[in-house]
Image (cartoon, rainbow, N blue to C red; front, side, top):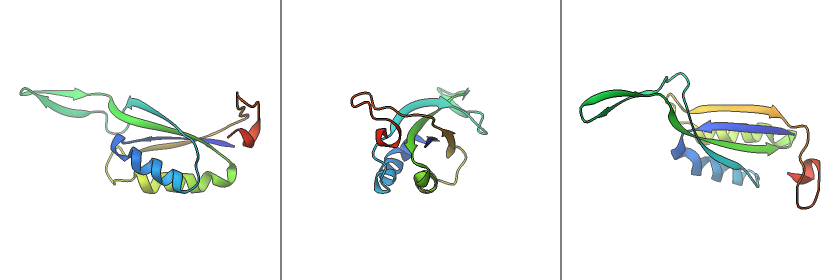
Length: 112
């Protein structure tokens, strides 16, 4: 099993979520996060004063998938989160050693 973490622009959340549901992903965790990458923040103007916003609001989507779902999930996120502009985000793939459903005590892929 793998954990896919995608950091995306907030306005793309619904599109990405809907696309993941269409390819059979039944659950995900969404977190509002802030950060920066190549952008290094952005220049804002407030009452005539310029200032730099160092941390840009983003959304992190976390999904645990079987190995055979991995490429489909990655491609789905790539296509649905894409705008072609700086700050589209990143996708991270991590190994998952074990999953346990608390209510039923199921383990492994059954618990996903």
